Length: 402
View 1 (cartoon, rainbow, N blue to C red):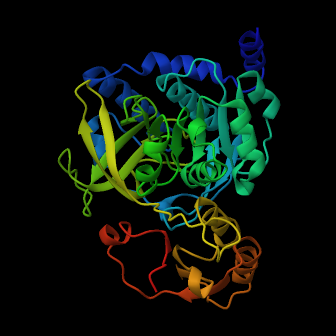
View 2: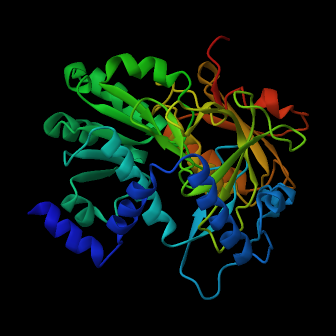
């Protein structure tokens, strides 16, 4: 009865079920059938932005684009959402996307949960901010809670309701799992599957995978939500029905399968902002799975250390990243953070037109002091970075060996 009510309610609100049905049908496209479908979508999305593409040869002649190429003009007629990226690749930006982009993303999440074996069991979902659609989520057995204040209330809900899986940004999941373990509920965690999104799982997966039932990942960008999703077998399957993914070298040339390069994406559905041959700040590799689909792996970028020592008020994690774009996004082009717990200091290194004395940096410093209990130093960086090396380092690095 509850599922029936949800489907009716969804039809008159987000229409996510419609997108889910479409994605379930398209999930098995591979080989020539997938390429034919993708080229049709590419012709449409490039045409929407005034480009003439009639073949793959035409497509590959298009230039590689970056954040600097994205227009900053708001749509006039179409419904849209403004998305402030977390700056997790080191470059914060405002992105405009069609309203239905979020419905598509949520439908892919739901499809991933199905692949993880979920039927209609509870999902505990960590989100940025207080839930706006908790009533809608209740009908589909999803419990959303704010990851910015993860604490006892979150742990208590998980312990009481024993959800089938926990979904959300990786660092927030790590923080929640550590709290569950501290509360002595390792037995409950062992029966829960993890759906890790947004940031690199490097270092975190090794910690959590032995403690949970299963560990699955999702990969996406603010500019292109959901680039790859779990295949249910532990791999990140490229969502080829929503986007086209390339791995290119530093000169924009395609690399061989299994070779590392920049992740470059084309969004079939964004007719507001041209995400076409768009070079992300992340690097990775592609390989053809034996089942005929492409798998994205060894992703480098967005590494965020976890630390919950006595020197900090709250655990260092993903949520240290997100306030940067909201307070400093118009001042900085690139950034990285070092945290020195023993010195009780956070050091923000940045590149951009602003000076380190700009008063807006004080807003971030006040936020850090209130939430972490650390003092903030701001450094305008002149360092010349090799991106291939840089992203192998942590975006947020905790330095404890001092």
